[in-house]
Image (cartoon, rainbow, N blue to C red; front, side):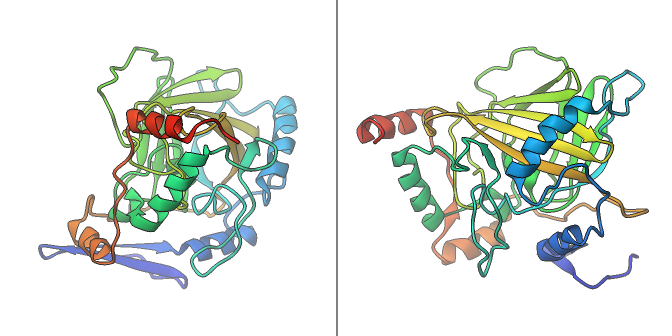
Length: 316
């Protein structure tokens, strides 16, 4: 039995007499540990502002020869911490009662704003007032949101697969490498279907076939089933990964946009990944939300999005 440290929360989920609990630092404590460098190793680029980190990382990667696995690829294995609060809002947002606040994580466009169509932004505001994110019901968070939730990540790799483990809501990914076999359009998953490949020292992961029932952040930025997500992971020094994700969905956004973040290697000796005991699609939780007037976000079809876009007319 592990000791309970200050700043840890105990989450207890009861169902038919079965109780499961985990111990994990709260998001606020995690961010404080990160800011004081208590959890992470040093980095060659400052990462408190994603846009500044992004520009530095692009240059740092050119000069860095990463450690390699037995098959000659950059070795990204290990446990990593992610700073910031992109999961709250990908754009710049102030500190509030339920938000820690933070700078924009959008590096393209250069203004740090997500190029959402006017009809989609209006729908987003409605969604935020009426719906809850699926992670609130212990469902998967979709891509790329799954990659910037609070908490540590563990990366494992073999010549054939790249694996991502997360402590949050049993979110894990097994990404085949160099497997470009086609996937039928009728296959729709919470985190979609991902295929990876190496381009030099960068791991490129392309994701399609999401069920589009999740959001990009807690501000209800949504996407359709036609959305494509391209992630790029590059080691810029031994202990820092430059993470980029480009989202393309022309029915919702006027142009593709790119998120950039830093993964820093966890420096805590003997650190162990924990698994969140989360009851998937917890009806008890959903009943509480329904009583408060909220429903689980149902998603939007491509056809509905296109009809709304045509009805709205040209962008101003």
